[in-house]
Image 1 (cartoon, one colour):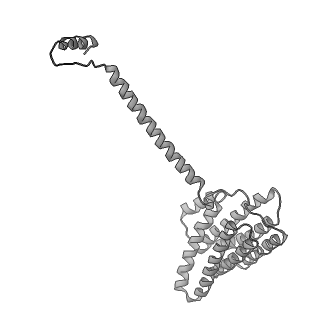
Image 2: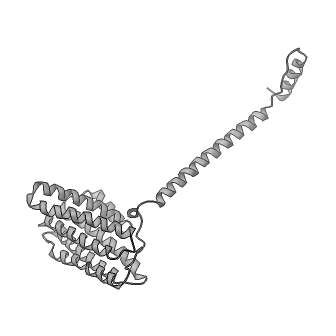
Image 3: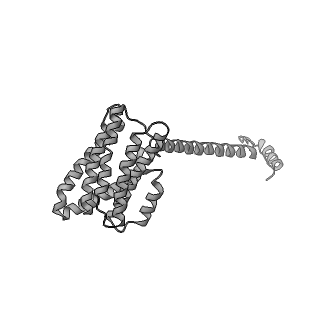
Length: 248
């Protein structure tokens, strides 16, 4: 229907008593539709922006195990603590030398323990720019040892898990350590249930692991408290020593 015919029909009805015709313009409907579409687009953009901000905040507040290692947050407070941290790193070297080497996987695990002790000693005795790289090497070496322990305890491991661990090892060593430590804890508990000779070692392992977790968290929460890191070294060394019982 054309605009001209619409105007003619409106004039024809103007003379009818009690009838008032309001002219209708197609441009008004088009303007309203465009305005509604604009409001809908704005609302969608606003919701999308809010969702992005929420995801960004959640990612920024992710736990430390999901963050890349960027050097040491808290260093050794003084010379005595530095010496204590170096000395308490040496038991890992001794444990690695005493670990059974019955096959290739056990040999790799034993060598990785030696690497943990050496890397930790180098880190705690270092200064300057080299320190942040040795901090990364320290965490990465610990994660490597947990992966090697998983392979030493089980001949067959999920290939996808091992591949993912290898890829995540350089950038998320804490997460890799947590996954493979959990696998080791499950294997240790199952073996202890079936073998009475392992129950005492498993009890010591549980206590040392609990204390090690407490010291590890406390070292991060109370950075000004000295010797917490050295205490974590000792608790972790006791826990690792009990794990060697599984390989005998």
